[in-house]
Amino acid sequence: MCGIVAYVGSRNAQPILLDALSRLEYRGYDSAGLAILNGHGVEVRKKSGRIENLAKACQAKPISGSMGISHTRWATHGAPTDSNAHPHLDASGKLALVHNGVIENFLELKEKLSKAGHTFQSDTDTEVLAHCLGDAYAKSQAKGEARLLEAVRQTFNQIHGTMGIAVIHSDLPGLVVGARRGSPLVIGVGQGENFLASDTQALAPYTNRVVILKDLEIVALHADRFDVSSPLGSNTQIKVEEIENGMIHSDKGSHPHFMLKEIMEQPRSIENAFRGRLDRDGGTTKLGGLNMSADQLRQIQRISVLGCGTALHSGMVGKYLIEDLAKIPVETQHASEFRYGDSPVSRHTLFLAVSQSGETADTLGALREAQRRGYPCLGICNNVASSIARESDGGVYMHAGPEIGVAATKSFTSQVMVFALLGLLLGRHHQLSANHGAELLDAIVQLPEKIRQTLKHSDSVARVAKTYAHSRSMLFLGRLANFPIALEGALKMKEITYLHAEGYPSAELKHGVIAMIDKETPTVLIATQDGVYDKNLGSLQEIKARGGPVIAVAEEGDSKIQGLADAVLQVPKTHELLQPILNVIPLQLFSYHTAVALGRDVDKPRNLAKSVTVE
Ligand code: F6R
Image 1 (cartoon, rainbow, N blue to C red):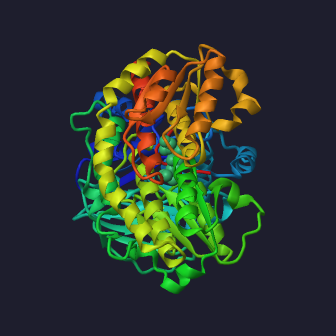
Image 2 (spheres, rainbow, N blue to C red; image 1 turned 30 degrees about the vertical axis):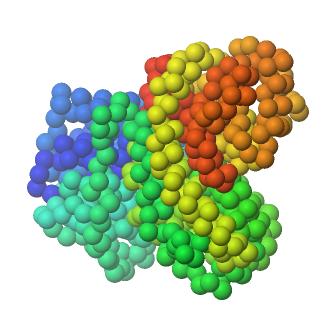
Image 3 (tube, rainbow, N blue to C red; image 1 turned 180 degrees about the vertical axis):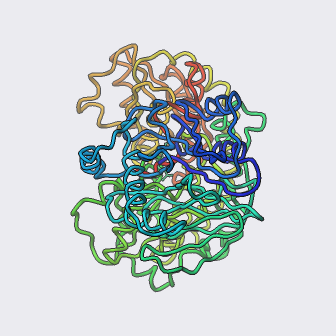
């Protein structure tokens, strides 16, 4: 997790580091810090809390210098305090380090260093890494730049875990050394200045020319040049890429929060997901990035979807879509569980790694594991330059645009749309008729307008949210493809309001959860008119019989539900396979308005980060 930025050039480093860092806050925001070479040595400022706290400290006492490193943190080892914030110094106080990743054997290393007389100021694994680097530097016989590079290489061999690092040393002005193992790192190529960052978005105002470092590569960065080498020290070939997406820097527009903006963007983001991909005549879709022939598509006998959190929920909806359209059995797995599990995988299985960021460590690890076992793996990602997008054998981009709010909203609906497109394509290579394909295509084309219609109910959802915002706990129920929508509704509620919420298949109610029902515990029941509508009405009655309030997600004009439920969140009707996309929208709005009513920090909820780049 965490985001790092480094700068070397001729401009004042402090404002550049603070600005670039603010674009990485989605990777963590519990503390931040920077270190700059000020002409005499390394000067450090670090503060717990948001980057704005660090900015205030820097304004009060600016550091002057034209090279430095910086970091925004999501705590893994040690509480989010000033002393645990990065950068960390080595024993000499001359070497400063920022780190994104986790050092798994840090306790062992710390013990060894402590015995050798090292003392530590923080509880972090990163400070141990800084001391290891400083130790290797002190013992090295090499001179100048080569000495720091050798120290990094030697330390690489000592540690278990992941790291994207940037290091400076006061004896080596004009040099930043960066290295990666597991965690992403990119070089931003400027004119008379160069940058390092955890991702390209940080560099948007400064350059669109980037080098995406490969795993285990080390870079020696100067203002006018950079050299990339392998762990063994040989120079490696680099490719400078020009990126477009990185230049997009989102703002909230007229919305009070990114989350609301992104919910409201869904008519457009859904359209972007299917634009140019529909083939009305063939009753199918065109997905150019799959890199699979028609024969290979026909040979798929099983699909395994890997993802985490919201991305996994989209895969769970995707399972219903693909099984219905293509009659191919689909299983969904928490990426983190697949990675270390022993479950057998049958031959002719296609893996799909779903990830908005494309950087989620658990999903990336699971993708690599599936590839190691020799299975074809496709990525469903939003972030075009991401690790999962680059490492998978092919894939489908969501084209949802930047998602800044920590709670995933538009990426979820875009992911489900991608599953619909994929289901159609696979269906047409298996047994689906062109007519059935065309029916779904017609519904897809009409979906943006139906989403617009759904979003018009935002104010009435806000009123319902206000009524129930002070509940201690909520249940979310749905069946079949709407069960993952219930899970997603509960996840949104938990992460941005901190209320206890649980998602269940409606019929599971009577197997235990019903004990939770009382007049203080509202149940959100997804009950649109599908094949299990009557069954859902049965669950509704069971809840009402026990005095529990029911908030139903139901179709506009459903008078039956209106007569039974305490509140109704209305959605228009669409093709049954696409209905989950509409049904999740009032739940996104419901959690959003509840969080606002409770005065929560909607876009940056506590303890979370947008992109989870550690295991
Ligand atoms: C929930 C949420 C998380 C992410 C999960 C995977 O709102 O945002 O559950 O869905 O961390 O992230 P990606 O999709 O980037 O792999």
